[in-house]
Image (cartoon, rainbow, N blue to C red; front, side):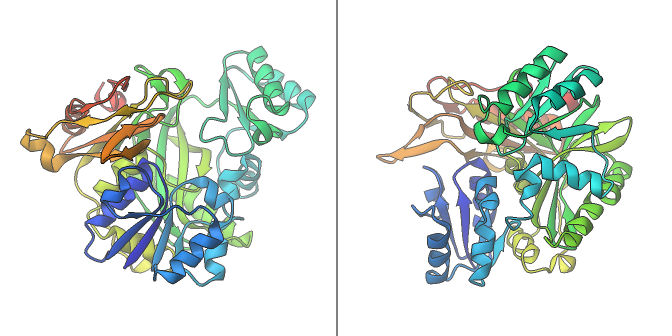
Length: 422
């Protein structure tokens, strides 16, 4: 099977890495890929959706997998399906679950799916009045796509009002903030849960925990994610069942009733409050870095998982998950997330520690290649992934792998998975 992966980050690299070892996969293409994906397949310098669809037709692509949210919200799936091409991901309409927080919150309310109390508005006075009714902290969200950064947790009523004003004026997030959500803050613990969906059926992957803050102890600014681990011990079979019955199943049923059946991966950000799951947000793609730790935990065919999801055949799939843990540690560039950094050559030591050869690897993200050398080109550069029979064993291997990687200005958190190990 020939497969094309849309995207250029660590998420797309990790999907490619999982598919590379699948005997059903003949050739991989990445559009556009990064400086390291050419070791897994062929990079293609195309971004126009119609041209990508034509490439898929001309090169006998059996399946296209869309990594990032922007192409999904932009309608790439609809264009491919018009040409009878197999593509993994939700339609443009269904992608509103991430593309518009207002659509998402109203959908949750309509189908009685648990979520925080909220108001959606483009009027500052309405936002301000609602803010006065809430206890602090207060959550303010931009409606549109903000690369995972359009959420402000305000510690005071004044801070919440300033965040709302900055968003609505376009100062904070441009057009993405011209309408906002203001909602109550939920006090609990967060989970990232991923369901692979074919419109009616679904398969749930192990729940993960992400670390959004830049610095140890969950301090500093929010980022796209500085590390993750799975499966988390903060969920049991009872909580999984609650999430399936109260969230996943009514979501799929509701999307059918809306005339936009949901196919692809549904990424649910959940807050668990007193043992009850409440939806914080939906995303319409794999999380990053969660994808980097979930892919190596799947022992059955990853190719089958994606293909059956986009051919309405998930019910026939027996997905198998390893009895292991995975921890991913993001290594970022010097100035992340504040500003760009100078390119820096990446040196990876030869792995001489036996346990790392089979139980750890690197997923590359913000890298370029020049004269066959890899360079960190800013942002989140790569993810060091460790596997183990326990979270501690997986974490220790991930950090051992971090010690093998060198580039100027590298930074990473030293406490990934601390919630599970404290």
